Image (tube, rainbow, N blue to C red; front, side, top):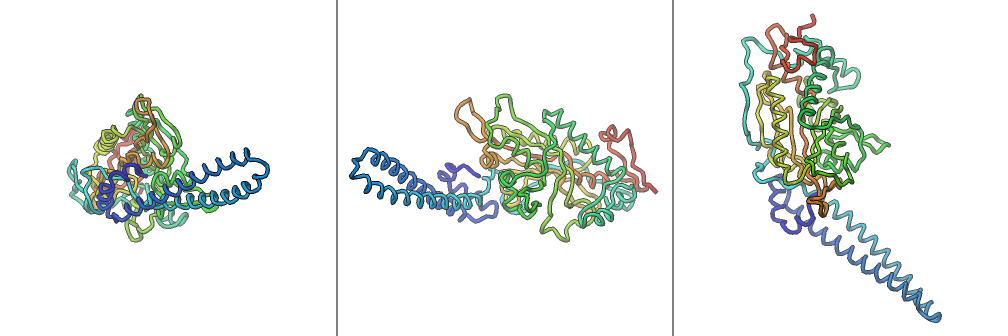
Length: 421
């Protein structure tokens, strides 16, 4: 959630942020009204409770002949306290619901508008061109014995697949390369749980506008994560962490699950949009004043990976309406996919400022003084979808695929993936 003091002091700025996201500014007025009602209800409850405590002392000190009347008054006062407590609890729920509709305040310079209003910051490399008719990643994957969609569907349903042979090895190589790069950059490797409690999923912002993307285990009250961001954000939940030595940086390797609700008919071919995939996610806890610099550092790590894999890409500043509720700014790195003639997202990295930390109660002590929420950031460093761009970009006329040099040590020195038959 956003800082309540900030909301009260600068409602117009919060309204502008909501409008940039395509949300109604009325959500701000509603949240402020609910906050006033909540504070008034809590004040009434506390005043009545104080009166009740004082009355109890009066009863204890009163002469015997007055006690019966005072006890009767005390019962009436006790009932009023219970009613006030119930009203305060209800007002708290209303206020929390109203505040949950206020998304993170976008950082100055983020483009306003929806999905197509992004700004391209830079491009790298020339899109691949061929003197033959290129195959798409699924055709290549089938020739190489790397992707088996048919049996994935047979076993698990649509949007599932098997990575086989060189396909499985390519994914492990990508993830291992990414993990080594992360470790070299000071990240602590993590294999986090992929089932989390509702308060963790909610705290990261995935039970808001993205709730229909999340798988829930009925009867267990647990959720399958769509990114390691979720368990890594919950790792220090309820803690005061020490940032004096610098940011805490983690790299989580996990299997991820997404329902892909609302995407029927989109990217149904191949492994671009699937229900299960592997991902290596960077996650950082830092001070609010260092968050933007850390954000650029994450993007640089992503770009270096894509450059070393020989992929052409662009970096975009995602528009406010496409950010997600927790992100104050997000950069996507999109690689060129030759057979689609388009850039497709391979990585994203978000600066969530203190929004998630407030919800999850993760704090630090600035200058060893009063505690304050930390800032959190996240960014992809490798995922299954990268195989799409790799196969298509580095294919040859005979259906073989040249393995980028940086991956070869993780593949036993294989330089070219050859068709299997």
